Length: 247
Image (cartoon, rainbow, N blue to C red; front, side, top):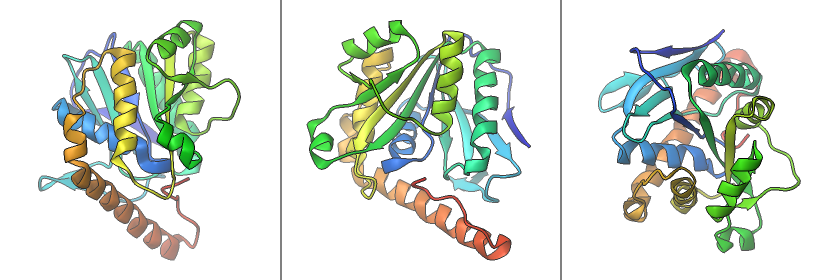
């Protein structure tokens, strides 16, 4: 069973959902974590499932669910921060519930952040790619300097939501940063945030990201370590493979 629980009544009509579940290069968690911090976003809810790893996150001495929802009224955005890789057998349920949440809340746009494993020359080029759900979004992507993906394959929660968005004519864009999946580099998050700033006029200052690169990287490495520890426990108890942070 999977459910989205809000801690208070909120009006998200006209908001943009920004999500970035852990994947290649951990671009999503790095970018989302930075956006939440810089915009002082408010913790408004969480997502729970009996299939999630049995862990809690502890921040500023406070135990919290590992998949949390934040909102910012001024910027009119709602974000999701996940501190572990989503198990493959939860992906469909999570995408379904999340998309229903988008529709029922009056959210009008989805922006997904991810990494795309690529050759070093593509990483160094600074090119950021995009997949869009509507023809109008293609124009916005071009204005923002992103390269539209013409052929390829997308996977995960963001891909499943994209299918629904295409069918409903809802604005949805996947922002994909070329990464080395074996390297954690805050520059990946910076590239994603700069692209999103241009796409939805978000105005998140990235000047501190380079200065805080070590801190950001440390947070992500702690996330990796926490996920591995829980996965190892799962393997011993359940006798089955746990989710990989790079799945």
